[in-house]
Image (tube, rainbow, N blue to C red; front, side, top):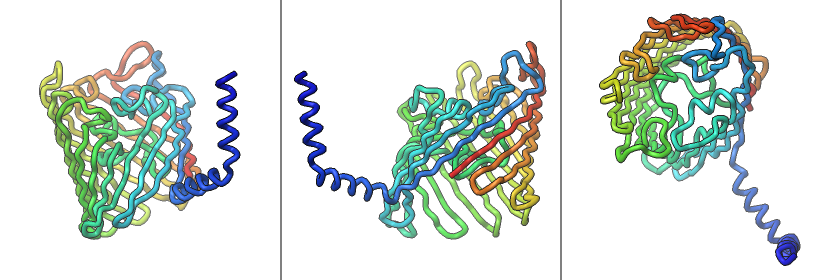
Length: 361
């Protein structure tokens, strides 16, 4: 009874102070007036013609369930952009889903397979030259051509490439600086805990450098390099991305070369990969997307098996309205090793079809 009385008295005091509540409400409204809220929902279905007893689509940490409908992503993003010198902002991405978050969790970030804080960082534009943007916290990597899909961007193909999952990191935690030198050149550098680490696993840091070059109209070249120690292994990564548009036709390429020293039970390892993309906009609403890639995991440090992989993917895409996109897909995977489940055995090929719908706002 005594605790109840104290609680009721406190509530009475709080709600009797109408002026204080109004002042607090105005303060909160002022703080949130420039904050934008965006989001996305993604659902899909995939079928593996190998009909594996494991019900898996092998070497697909994303979209990995055979003959199953999936809620792949429910995302909310809160952000206040910082664009001009002296401005500060932030970004917070909250991801929930049954196929995406468990594959992209940073070490030490979350314990749930279904929930992930994809990004959470503070931004500030320092008054240096044209403006030096600093991002401090957890952010998605600059490496790779494909992205962790969200409200503002999704890939040309429904399924992700081998390069996306096996050759590059997903996120970093640390400090990133970006400076626009000219209309043709933007430079970025970062000091981070490592690959997908919120908590560092050693006393060393990893370093990242990125140059974005636009030598010609509708032409972009991205040069990226990263080096650092992961656990006790020194890792190097070089990544080159090219993009060129010819009216309705867009061509892209993604090249990766990585090395790692002293991998347990393996020793020194290397991996290389090349993916090519073509997108042809048949109309304002319909486009055909094609991807072909090869990936060599020479010692098996990335996939668990020393193998050469290649795949071909066809993804027709239709934009129903400003908020809704639907995609269908056929994909053929192949390896020089028996890496794919087939029934109760294994084989060297895998063919799948899929369907995906994305609502974004």
